Length: 170
Image (cartoon, rainbow, N blue to C red):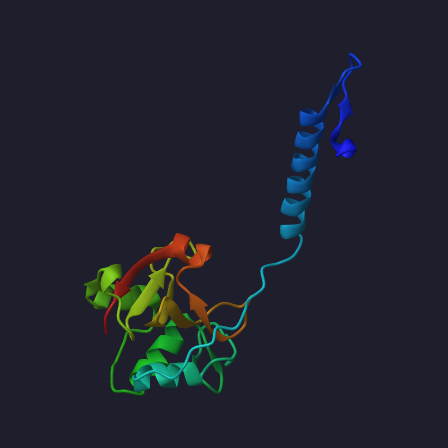
């Protein structure tokens, strides 16, 4: 307990000020250590669904991200991934995320259903990224050059919540 006593300039000792200095120091160290690294992308575990569309999309996890591409052999960008998955099941979608959002009916977020398309503003445009909703706040998408592959993410992550722009149903 004596470690929290601090002598002030006028020669008096104060326990409270020492304790406050210790707490502030501890918080500063904790904040800086939390910002020291890049965010870890943890693989999301998703069990097989009742939907062949979702099961096929999940089977493509790990396929490389490639801008402008739309096949498992070459890789996918976000809209190429969504278009490829739905095309396999006879659903024709436009090529870009923005065109998909404009062509499909809007659905309220509270009515999200497995297979719905979720849209995000990642580049300053309202519908610049798209993924396929799985269930339980999870969606699968060809994320970006940074992450480099098709992966499952959580809608409840602060990044995706901040950039969310809408839902559409194919």
